Image (cartoon, rainbow, N blue to C red; front, side, top):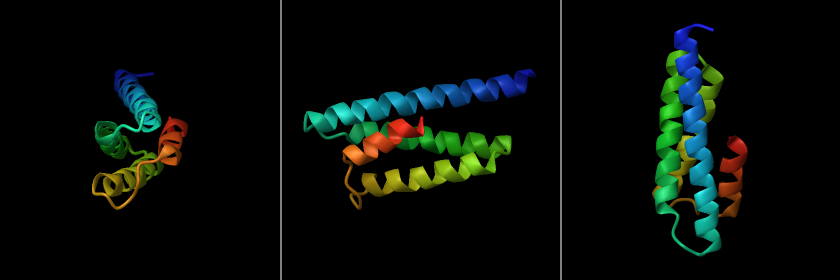
Length: 95
């Protein structure tokens, strides 16, 4: 594997870890009835970065998926959707 592909995979792995940690934190905050606003922000930023990285790498399906998730998280950030356990479970599964 060349260095460019290795860097790409390393960055994808790091973003996946960010998503996993933020989704787990979100689930814990929801269980404790604490506002998961910071977790939603972290998830949004990670999927935004993933969308761009996948797009630059030519992975259109991954970029499209990340864009769809980013849209959902943006709706949560603006109060149009509720951040519930189903959402945190989906984010964990996405990793």
